[in-house]
Image (cartoon, rainbow over all chains, first blue to last red; front, side):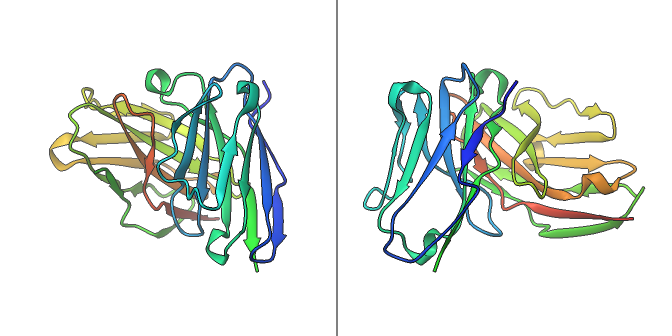
Length: 115
Length: 114
């Protein structure tokens, strides 16, 4: 079974530029998450989708971050304009039903460096 | 509010030694789930275990064991006879029932020295 796919793996941009990350979850997984992991910290939830609807985006900085999950499968996370503090690894995860199994499957992440 | 504390930032042990990773959590909910994830150098988070708040039985899976103590709000993870492949960052996490949001600790970097 294919895992969660993310791209690009690495991205370097200058502040005020924009960037987009793509995630393809495991087939059949209805729930998709974007987490931000700053160096030396644990992952922090940015947004959670159930199919193509947003369940929780309370920690998403909406003035610069946006995310969508058209058709309830792939998802894109965009940052515009980027700030230095956005340097982090952006992890995508998916799950069938986390409250039953508790298991989220994570991708390898997209590492963003903002100069 | 939920909080997960992993006081050990980094641990190094020699191969074949046992090592325990500590996790302390805070939550006001009576029903919740606790998790451990492993993050190897490749970056993906690998699920290791989930426990619910009603089940305080300790669990053993091969060289891994987990000790859940509700009285001290702790969920510690022990690796017996450690191996170099166990080197990774380990995260403890909490999820309240009905809320599918995982709150992670800051992680413990474990290095197994050959």
